[in-house]
Length: 344
Ligand code: SF4
Image (cartoon, rainbow, N blue to C red; front, side, top):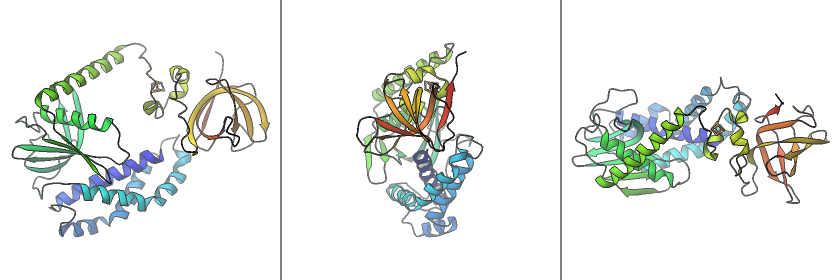
């Protein structure tokens, strides 16, 4: 959760800065007028800090997040210098044409053709595909268009597919791009490097659109099925609010619920098993249903939310390798949730 919020904070701070620099008619962050814009916003640290508070405020009504809020706030505030540095680095790499007169094309605004220059946060819609997306930065000149996407995390092979999908959206959005101008260049900006591709040719645009159409049709067919099929996947299920109820998730044979521990650091994991016996005041032996091995489960207090013999599903326990490297230890924290399964 911490990494996700940190990524959002960087992205949203960057969006705000791009928008305000546009409004201030700055051609780049090196424009002399940018100093006044930054000063009016209170400076980088203050922008990032306000964004942290905004993101945490969104979690206040969430019963799962409530016990974590103070430690999240502490962690994020400790990371302000690092977050600020990433925002500065991404902004320094952002190339835009400006100043421009018409300002950003914000989500919810009236769709209108994009004029010459750079536009931030542009919502694009391909009506024929019933597909939409929001692009960080689009720069249009007389016969070319550059689509830029900012990334706050590590490079991933899916990033290229994402910007290619944006190229299709741009090409097919008759409101923003009535002339059907193609994207000449696609740029993915990381804090320390850029990755640039040529825009797709018209036959490539058709291929990408066909692939998107097929995936949309598959998704729609899946939505029609009753009950809808569960399709466990690690990068989706860990954010799922109902995974404690999803048998497919718990029965999946791979590492969807229990990602392998990396570099000796504790890894958040979900586990189903039977509490075999008490080991100590705050430790229990748990028979892991998936591996059929016994692991040591530590609880934060002596009042455990289960008893010996219970079958439990535990969300968000921290897994570490045991010192003898023969098995692992699970530690429940304030963020862990326990569900005791009952026969019905
Ligand atoms: S846990 Fe189950 S319901 Fe939730 S996203 Fe995964 S497969 Fe879908």
